[in-house]
Image 1 (tube, helix red, strand yellow):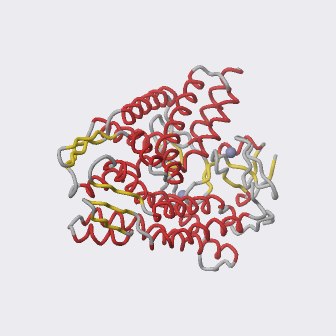
Image 2: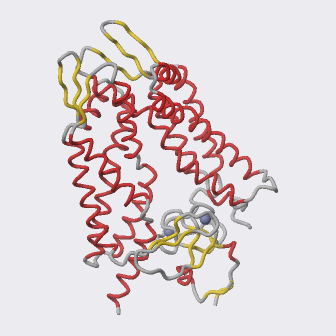
Image 3: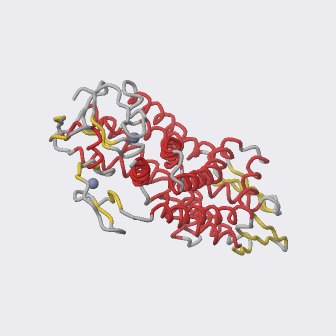
Length: 204
Length: 213
Ligand SMILES: [Zn+2]
Ligand SMILES: [Zn+2]
């Protein structure tokens, strides 16, 4: 017979098995993965990834993402410029999709992650843990959708490669891809267990 | 709360969205259990999961093959017709020396989806023949690391967006592969996004317990 408190139970992120939180390092009883491999320094790691992602996001917006050469006339488009020109041409749904994927989602994800990382250190009493878990789950769910703009540039380049119109990916495409990938890293390094208000050493 | 041993924890489940603890209740075939707090899917029960899983992963691989080796679109600019396949798109990126974006796309669009469904296929085959309990565990852990990088659905939306952007420049005809890709994404959503790996872990436990008895 083992007597346990329900709040000592944790979920393995790799196989969903319910485990007893034995403080310090936990190894999942079912899949043998470490449940929090970065238990002491994961907030720092997560911050480092997030800052990299935010820095990469600046050139992603300032530099052109798409360069078109139409019969010798060179046209450069930034992400926002592309959205505006799509809107002016009347492609409203596509303009909205790009706007959400490249502007709203990345910025929202930065803000939510910053908020979560701060709130884990300085908890606000009114706010429930359940809400923070839901917020984290939400960022994981929407995050990858910001890859749309990178894919679109890649597709356009490939689609027109051989014809008289040339389309090139600008510096922004690389910067944007780096930003998205590092945001994903930041979210993964962020330890869900921290949300529960347990400190990194595992004391409860 | 009292339990006999750690194995008894299999009778509990923690919601992946809101982290509420629930007790596992037996379900009828084909039914699913949802979280009472947030409504997220907790687990399902399908008595023929191995056969279904095997069939779906084979279908997915078939669609993946068609989607990659036949043209996705055919574009016409000033009388020049060009067929475009997914490997051609990746090649164009490397030709223009966009190595970082090229590698990101190669992994996300090609290697990860292919790897995921090959692993699913092997997993369900092993379960079907009741062999390799250990390898099943290792494959399941590998799969859990691959899952977050699965973005074929996003890629499909990107194709639609770029086609709309191209309307001003060229005439576009959608190829066979496009429909194969749509079907692949649908199977991917069904298998990769709604099937929880925990269901396969439970299956592994059930299958190999029977053998010992
Ligand atoms: Zn586990
Ligand atoms: Zn829930």
